[in-house]
Figure 1 (cartoon, helix red, strand yellow):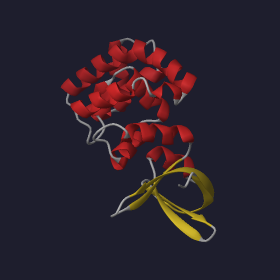
Figure 2 (spheres, rainbow, N blue to C red):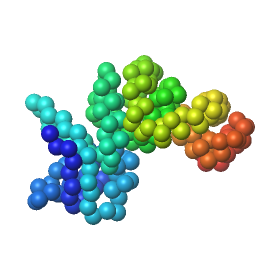
Figure 3 (cartoon, rainbow, N blue to C red):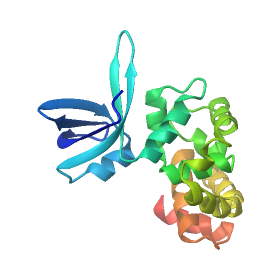
Length: 197
C-alpha cells in the first residue's frame, strides 16, 4: 500500500497530477482543493488512496491526511464511489463538508452534480457521528456558526431559486455572503448575493 508520494510535479490539471518519484511518473486523480494547493509548486508530497481491481489501478492523491480521511469516509457510504467522492470534495473544503454533514444540510449536498436527495440523506446519516474527529475543533467551531446561519442560507437560496437562479450557484454565493457577514438579515444576504450572481 502506498502511503504518500513525494516528488516533482511533472504535470498538473484540475483533475490529475503526475508526480515523478525516482524516475517513475505516477498519475493520480485529485480534487480541486488539492489542485489549488499544488498550483505553482515544483514539488509536492501527496497522501494516497489506492484502488486496485481486475480492470483498473487508480491512485487518488490528497494534499493532507484530513482530506484523504474524509474521502475514505465518503466511499464507505453505500452508492458513493471514488469519483463521486472526489466530486464532493472538489465542491467543498474539508471544513465546509464537515459543517454541511454535521448540520444535516442536505440542500447544499444535493447541489453537487450526481448527488440526489436520498444519497445526500444517506451521507448525512452515515457520517454525522464519524467525522467529528477529522477536523476536530475546526469542525466544532464551524458547526456553531453553521447552526445559526443554516436557516438564513436555506431561506435566501429558496428566494434566489424562485428568482430564476440555479440552486448550486445560489447556494455557493449565499454561503460565501453568510460567512463574510454572519449577522446579516435574510434580506441583506439576498441583496448582497444578487450583486455576485
